[in-house]
Every structure is written in C-alpha cells, then in structure tokens.
Image (cartoon, rainbow, N blue to C red; front, side):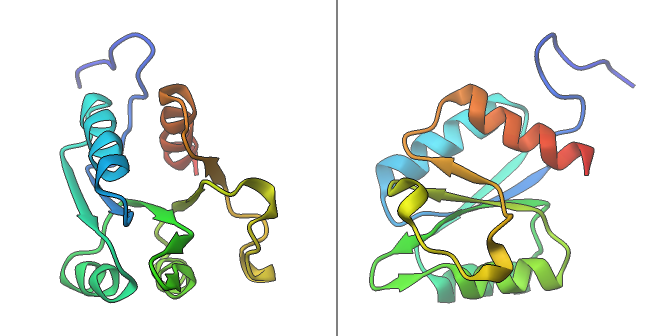
Length: 128
C-alpha cells in the first residue's frame, strides 16, 4: 500500500456525488475533491437527478446543497441514510438553515468553505 501524501487522508472516497445547483460552486468542489485524490466526481443539480445518479451507482460520499432551485435536498439525504452513505450538507445560509430533526446532527459546511474544511469532512467520513 502506498502511504498517503503528507497532510492528505489515507482513505478518501473513490466516488463522490455533488448535489449543487450553482455550476461555479460545483466546479470548484469538483476540482478540490479531485485534488484530494477522489477518483470519480459526479455533479447533479436537482433532487430527481441525484436520486437517479444514486440508483445508477451509489456514491461513497456526497455533498448536498440544502437549498436547490425550488426544492430542498432532504429527500436525497433520506435515501443516503437508508443506504448508509455518509454525506455533508452544504449551505450558504449558515446556522439559520432549517433542517428536519432527523438530520440535526448531520455535518454541515458553510459556503464558501475552505479546502481544509472540505478535506476534514472527507477525513471524518473515512474514520466512520
């Protein structure tokens, strides 16, 4: 086994699903995830697209923008929980973003998030 590069987690997810309706933010996340060693990054912009992507191939990890255009990502979160796939909510609205009680303890990243925060989310997933 090849050791991880200094400062990089030894176990990053191979396949990450990004659910983000802003293409600039999605591209930024994708670039950073690939830089961390993630092999496959898929990006979708709606609940329907995300559920289809999960049905086609379950990801190892997901980033879910809470507020999508005219919908919220909680149906995706429910599916990921059912499949035991770790995920992080991503929001630009901070602590005031309301999430259902079932997801109150779910990790969140504040947009814009630092690369360190994003990498820490991946590292926490690896330790679960």
